[in-house]
Length: 392
Image (tube, rainbow, N blue to C red; front, side, top):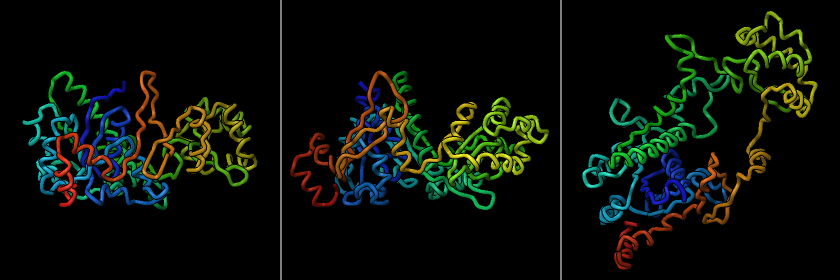
């Protein structure tokens, strides 16, 4: 038994935030019915063709779902929804601002008929306020939230290398839905959840926000280094390779000087006697560190760091992550089926000894449409008529 076995989710979703949310609900056993536009589908299906012709984003966020093609404005679409909604526990949507309300799918319109239904709206900026109707994509929310202003080098800002604003919104939608399901057990009532990408990302910006409190200057962009702790970040070693390391306290600083640099006098040098001083004098300290690390191989540096109890990591590219020995040894990779055959998939984070995650196929566009409509009582002739009219 999985935690969400018996829960049905109906999702009007596209791109990343909502699909990532609902995929995680499916991981826990929920039945997720993904509504897509006939013939076109979720536009994330066409982002690229990197996974044997399928899009990388789509493969990542859409396993274990049923694909129902339905033109929400088409003749007869409302009848499909009216038969489907009584079976639904959670409705998720990240349509354009105001679209759900125009389609009669807002919480206010549904709650009277379906009082136990949980409705989760995911948007860029949320209801109300001057930005309510403003378009929001991941890059734009990274900008509005201040994330980009703190990321990159001193010379140039940079965005995150993954869809971090979409991911944050998807995670908060997921956790809010789980909370709403728990609340419904106590009250018998559904909830309205309003999750925004902006608020999700600003929550994640807590450190730089408070670092800049009351008009103080923000943390400087420091590339892969830390804006306030030193030494902490990438250091080049012999052969042009890079090791990431991080020191958190004075005990580690002393061990680093004694056992990695083999220069114990640096530990008590007045220029480096505290993190604030090391940060202030980081350029001079970097020269001292480079004198040693550039003469050592990556393996030797990591060996010294491990013996000294200093946190460190290799700088892996994507191929390095695919082959990561820790993921392999913990059996984190499994296979899921798809329209292009079996594909590797990473098990969701977190091991629970009471259940296994659901890891079902990635759906083809409209793969489950006929089955879903048949189960709702539509005849073969009605389904054929819908197909001819382009409703499904």
